[in-house]
Image (tube, rainbow, N blue to C red; front, side, top):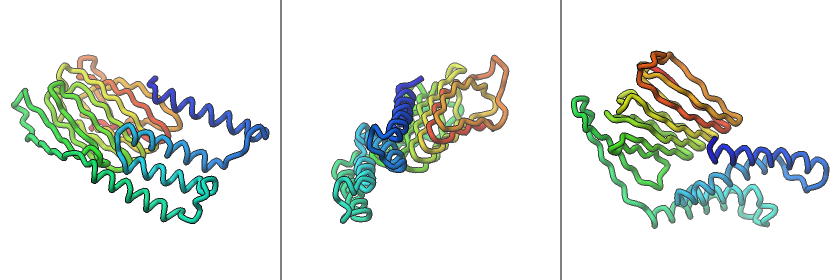
Length: 245
């Protein structure tokens, strides 16, 4: 179990403890809606800080300010003024500290064993980044958005896919495993992730769910000699769907 799964488990345990204690009158009660919003947007704010995504940081804090406007005494500027200010502040900071945008696209060539596919996008946008380096490893991250990605590599070894409050679809139809084996790590939080694998692959699935679902559709190979993709899927309040076609 990953550190993120442990963290979410601890959060849910603390939430359960608070609900019991508050009902016993040992602590002041907080509406359930505020608790849920605090967990969700507190998490996205921390993720924004880790990724240096100013828009994600400011919008998360703006929404939390709206939720606790009575405590902070800022009812006069909620909701629209504080949300608009958070948006403009995040946009301005992203423009000032904008990172370079690079796009490299190499045409697919099935006859070239040294084929590489690389795509870089502006790092502070809500886009997924695909990288096929010398090891054929793919990294994809999507937050508050929707993205479709096509993996094209002749030496695929694995992937890290993370989706938070969005929808991510990754197609592995044109991926060829380097050594007949690959590891795909998937983390989905409050969103939906879809993975499309060739039906010629065999899958070994290890799943970890917290109020989420992980479903497989289609038939994959069961032959032990078939190329195997080892999927490690973690889903929190969302859906992961795996297709074989």
